[in-house]
Image 1 (cartoon, rainbow, N blue to C red):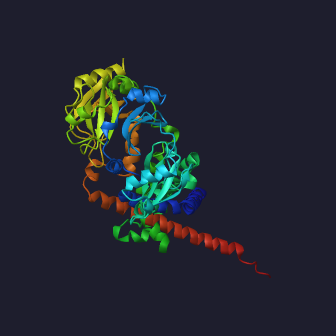
Image 2 (cartoon, rainbow, N blue to C red; image 1 turned 120 degrees about the vertical axis):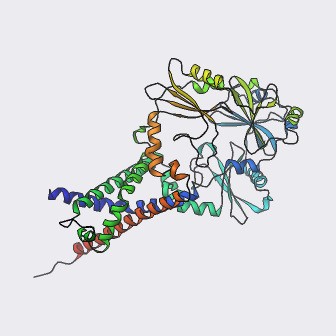
Image 3 (cartoon, rainbow, N blue to C red; image 1 turned 90 degrees about the vertical axis):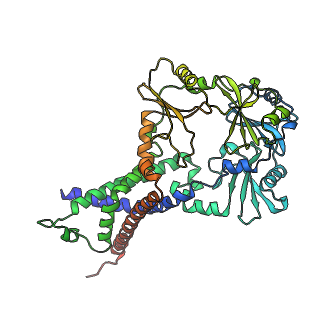
Length: 501
């Protein structure tokens, strides 16, 4: 019917006018995201590189003694021995951070401006004269979105070629965020416009989420309407001939180019906007459910208990790691026994048994892992268990550096829950229900095209995604141009003075 077609044209036109600016911005910034990554941050590799080796000789307290000195529970969620303000220190983490110095048992209570400047100076290996304290943040700025649990943050600028900015966390007693002129510039052309990570919007979490959901959802609807209109408006010659295809398009000028690019890239635009919307999990459709909530605790053998660990003995550690002191030691419980994860000794973290102290390089037996998996999910039958020597469609790494081999366990429960477990560390790497696996295709498959047959054949993937992004962006930009020209004509018509008779 004519009125239906008219309604579709008007809906497509005005949704396009309203949304083409962010859609074009998303396409352009999406290309930047392929290479710039996310927001500027302090990478784990850089953080570890800047840490000094632990002075284990100065460690005079055991973890349980440190917990007593700090008046803390002996069962923290996470415990790490690291260097803070040039002293060995235990950092307890149960959702909030507490630091106890391992040499005296003193609780770290104050990281003021002087201490923050010292921390930043040692981090940069530069004299304090080249650093400048800007202020203390109690609310996120553009570069500390998502760091609320690490506040207050001391913002410090550095007189170096990279124009570095550092944020020193008072609860952590260390640098939490590092940005440079280059990383900030890349963020402004990639992550910030792509994720709408403007601090004024992102600091209001629900408003930001709803904005992205509605903009991407309505954009996908507009693109679907555009594809339907492309079919409706097409006027094939009779008899139909390919050499007369151009004459079948009932438009000229920019409108013709919008039609052509919309036909070529419309489906990609729809799937890309839809998958972007689904990345925020509207209605939390992919979260929750599944069985095996107790598997993690069963594999660990219980919560972390600091009483299981003796005081660090520097001589024993030097025998195990001659001339290679770790930079950081994390305390873990694995299958009921105490273990350390030593970082900064080798390129990858080193697993060290605590009693007696020895490096463990052999994997945990599949039999022991399967026994604990069954204990953690009693009464639920296992449909399949398999050791994978290669990645599958759901457990993979873009840099192909996730641990292999991996144990995959499939449960025969209503949510068809899968577990991926690393035999090398007896650690759960992922847990996926059927909805989470579907979301892998709905979001990542449609949004980043990280399909193994394509993504790992670079630069073929780069060329394809860039071409699609440019096509979608050009189609949207032409639509924006047409829409604003129409608005301009309408405004002139409205404001044109009436002709007197």
